[in-house]
Image 1: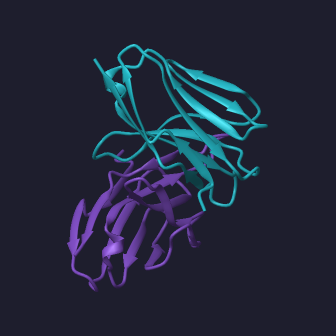
Image 2: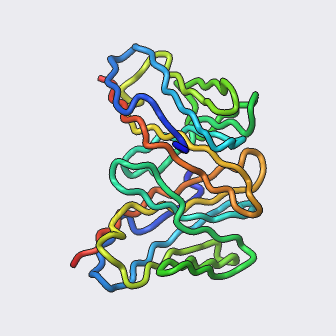
Image 3: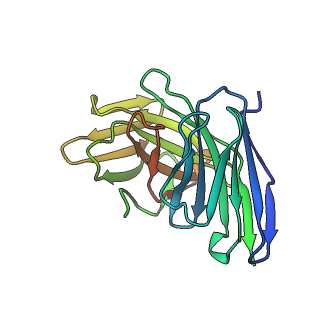
Length: 114
Length: 113
């Protein structure tokens, strides 16, 4: 039971390049999320998917697109990377159980855009 | 706009002391208030959570105090240990609609011997 996995762990891009961050969960959760973490800013929600087949914008969606490929997988795409997108990206998944909806986080992808 | 404000940004506590981190929220629709702990190089992990129908929740050395009228909640770590050194995030969420969470900006806690 791997939980939430993310690939790659590290990536360096040049301005204007594109890439896709991959995320998969094996907990059969309905909801999945993409966050970015920057110093002093906490975790900010980029996009989320409440259930398979749906995606919605979060707090900071500009410059990103997402795909909920199936119930397990939720990818984040940067079409034209910018230095402002240098960050650590976390994927998470959750399910409402009783009165709790713990979000389980992956190990993160550290992205540098030069 | 920052819907969940967290303070302090950093905190140094002596071993055995009490660590206190505070958060305030604005959205009265929030009905779920978790705290997450993050170690360097790792993703955040749920530490403890509370719903607004209780004013306090305790799990081991960790306690959440909740003040609904003031729209504030805090994390108390009793008998703080060096292994508690980590970054702590408060969060607030509204059940339903994807169960999103809004996170505070984090508190870097260091527990010294």
